[in-house]
Length: 303
Image (cartoon, rainbow, N blue to C red; front, side, top):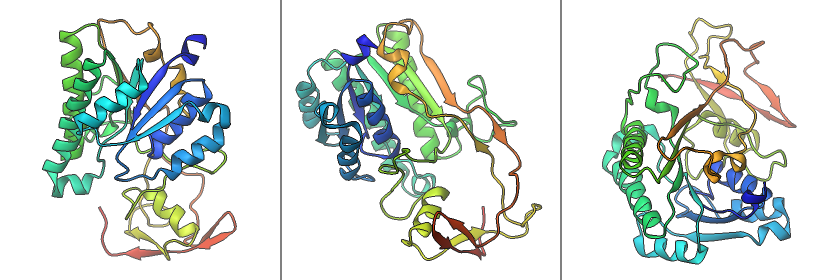
């Protein structure tokens, strides 16, 4: 822990959902944290709340830089302000599958070219440790679940391909330059929030995942939850998806921040421990979330 308390970590996309929780854990562990975020799908409010959660002393170790990873000048300034950066956790990226199909070039430019620009600025400032936030979408449609890291990759859309291409770029780079330490973090759509409820998933615009829709209906931001399909062979006719359950990952204890990652390899990890094929019971169409009543309706379209 002593070495961790002296670590300086730069987190791209650190104002976002996963990023803000990671920043909270890093600050709690004693790290100095520099967040780079262009606020495309996030808000600086999340970082204000992070500062509240960790307390004044640890909040003083957090610095926010509003900039895009494609902006080399501002990124150089962020790294210069941070001094010696020990590691980068790279969350910044576009992540909507549907939008990636409609606007593939935007995704290739932002996610792939942006990561290459990030690697360039890291190299210029002598930082060669990176955790890349990849995705389990790189597995495509696996024949069985749960997935393991050894499963073949087969991305099926532009978003997934950007994640897979970046994985290849980073592993090729590491093979050519063994001093680099690379971790590829693969995971499915996370849900949940900090136990305090002060930070959680709060995307701008129309959400791309189910849980934000449910949450926004629960608090009255949206009037109804649309359920796509009512003739599945399930107890209530609605679709069923697997749920992966695992305690929060404690990134501050990750070996990327130490010398325990061998310099001649990269590490791939996807967060999944158990798939529940059946829920204990099917909830009624109208139910209660905390003290708020919310309703759903059946829509005509489904995947």
